[in-house]
Length: 102
Image (cartoon, rainbow, N blue to C red; front, side, top):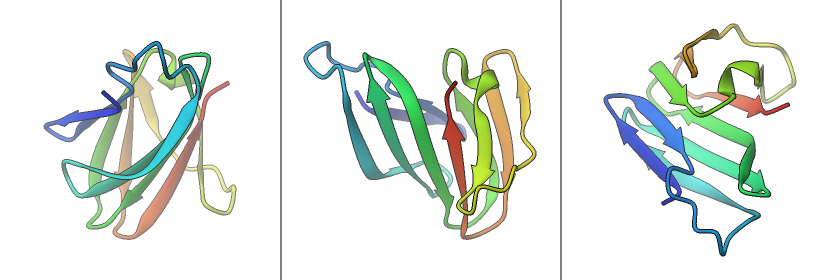
């Protein structure tokens, strides 16, 4: 409902109920040991945080995610590869990435 992950691909809000048009969650763990938090408004993702416990490649799939602003916890831009509705992040252990949708 809130998070799906297969083969290190994270999909936020894959089956969000219409009764929850706005909300947030923190602390869900995706495959690859990535801890995820999300905020949404009007049934659309607005912000996502990813904390890499071990590090590694993390791919996020979500409609419009290629337009997201990707920063670290201090607001510094992070390099991300965006293509075909996905963003790929190569994360070091204990790194936190913030994805902010436009």
